[in-house]
Figure 1 (tube, rainbow, N blue to C red):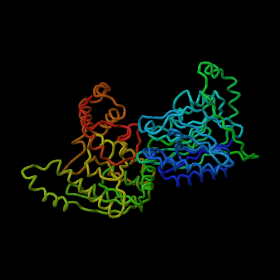
Figure 2: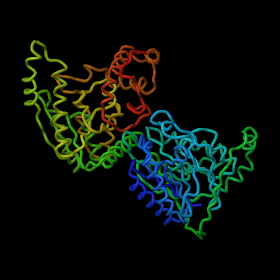
Figure 3: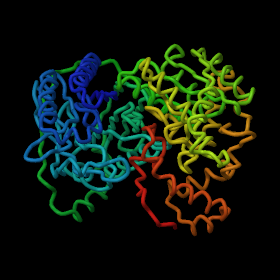
Figure 4: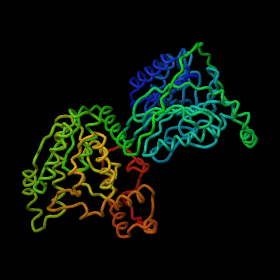
Length: 572
């Protein structure tokens, strides 16, 4: 049997564009002489369509688009993810063949944790569907159905499925691709089945879908793996009938069958495909996983590229200070979009050092970007004049410091409005965690690229970008300089915060692992650093609610993953 896994990048709500993309991949699968082509979960609408699913017109249009797709499946079988209303709304896989929809599988397990909210929209299915085609029995599942051990995978295997297919929209976080593959390996072994996993790819608001579609044999060996973070049609030949011999020797299935209640009714869909004749053998790709920093870089680049393209922007603007965050943001923007579409703007004040001003200019030269310098001192003085009377008798403090950041945000938004550029904010997760960021200042923007990147990882990414580029993209002096907001004389971040090397470890444990104050102290963290950091984190929730969306890289990103009340007196 020849499988084609269509790892595509759909756009939520673009039913016509998604249909064209799906039909193009079906055409490529046909040209490759494939028997079965897999499309991702909710490929017709894009994932996740969220409250679009509450609109009857949208759901009806998705069904109509599916019918047009099915009409093009006269000589192969296509499994297509789609929302379908049938008395209730289901996250479904349509079995398309012979020019029509031959059957429907309804997702059984609906995730309702982390970034998922499927219980809000869908009813759970209870059906078992097996497709018989090209001499194989194929059990159909959708995403979470196979993250659960046991049914429906075990039921499908006991009902005779030799190949379990899983169409999915599985979001990325660092390390997710390895976790996912280990899980599918276990499912293949437990069920004595070949497994084919087809994932979507691309950026959707904060979410990144990494692809890494794969096919495994019944012993858990990976036969083929698609690349990450890019579209791909993965074509591979398999012989699922090979599982029969192993099943005859594996008595565990018989014991399991005795213990399980009677199997649900199985819907079997038989599809007669044309004789293929002799096909030249394939050498499917087995693309290795990239290392952690490279995975992060690819996810950030894909997330920005798709956000810009899917939301109709042509160019972006980045405020470059000569610091590490803006330098990494600009460098990633150039990788995502090309230097000609990235504008770097430096806005020095009286507190900006010659070193940072020089580094901002050098960065733009290294990247080949447009560079503009807009000194803000005249604007600061004008604001100071307006505020002189109400501020009379008070010493300069945080208000004057934040005023500089807000002037910069205003200037960048003015450029965004005038030229249609997307403003990419430059703050990182460490700063956002503790509120070391200015509302309507450095937090201004349409997309916050480093929103889920800790400060220590920003430094690591800078080095990685330089090493990968084979030259100094981010000036080494920027990497070596102690971080500073430069909003007052001789200011350093460590005047207001613990050292980032200590702070980030506490942030990861408190924000991502939900460790308590007592547990953090028992873990060996400095109690003073813990108490200081936790107080800052909890107090800054109101700022995070107003932050732009940004690429999700970790299991507990701010926003969709971590939802903490603003008004909150719990300290523990």
